[in-house]
Image (tube, rainbow, N blue to C red; front, side, top):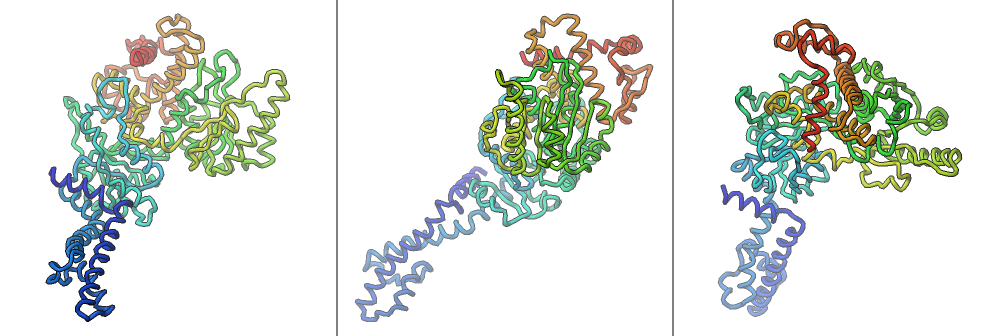
Length: 596
């Protein structure tokens, strides 16, 4: 196997790359020149000089039919005879080297590799991050986010990557072939093609074709091919559970997908982008006082496609930004169908926040009249489908709001409220030059890299929280909803920490009884809102915590006995003999210790 590996590595460096495509041509030309020179001497000396004979003799060396009996007479012919086989071999390597590499890999080396379905923009960024092979950092110890220890020696090796691509004319194929990436052509939801790519022995597979239905079909096929074995409680390793990563753009599909029918970990580029938006240092709460002000937190979302819907969902998931402030969301889009679909899947959204939808054409006079002339939003997020329209909107926002700001505050002009901007393709635009309050989010190179998909960097605290409550690391076998529950708790903790503790300059260990009660209320309200948003309902149960059958039956039907106001928790705690308020506050304590 080491010999095959060395051959494959050598072929990767030599077969079909830009620099080596000149070598066969150079050798052929050099062989021809030396052969032509020698043949010319022979034909002239023999008196049989003719142009066809000269050409035939010169090219004959490349095919092994040169005048070998004359080699001892001319050095040029000896050089030509030496270079001829080298020229032929180098040409064959250039032409067939990639196919030979692929055959060697599929026949002898098909294990521990990475499979990627599709060569779209996000997948290209993911492949680049794997080829760069930067080991993810974690302050939670050596244990990998996947649930098992990383072999540092293997992690530093350049991985073998197999891409299943439908379009043979994709302009990026040659670029990645020259980087050593293998390609299989066809539909990724083909069972035969998946087996040929080696899904049974691969390290993991990234399923992101740009179509949710196709992604789910592949996930179902993977469950059939790999035949996942149920992990017993005493088994600690969860590698098989984390072998496939399935991209789902529509959150509703992930919400209602039956985990028993599919294989792998669901993820979303949109969710990664929005979680980063609310949690990063330069996020929507940057530079805005949401603690001392009594006003509601007002969020404007311009464009309500997949990204806009995910922004709204993550804002609702937080319940309130801080201090239990009421959240008001204004949505602007030219198509009401997207908003209707959002409410259909999340009908409780309007109970959690005040939501106003405005069907307006962006940049229209009506848009300026209803939005810009009465602009009083705390945060703004643009998630339009066209980059040129986004740029026009940013310039209009800057000119209109800056002018109004100057007229109202001539002595000390205030900075504009934060404006988060998503571009589809123009990831390198410096929009801070338009206005310092504007910043980009959802950069493809950041939300698509290996640390956020495979190692789930955003989930490191959620995983630790789950491990604490479950007493063992079972993240791989945890349902999508349970994972989302832990993620929501973690995201809310960091917002509360920044918005309440840091802005009030209070250390967590010095929290007063009054503030502790408020934090418990905020966390419980957030937890209730999150469950309601995901379709859960309240149903009282006299016996709850010690009756696992009742709990399982309730969870199956999305019912929970604790979906009540914070004021009702004391009575519920007495009935169930469990301190629910302390349980809510423990989340802060656990995450605080993890940070330390």
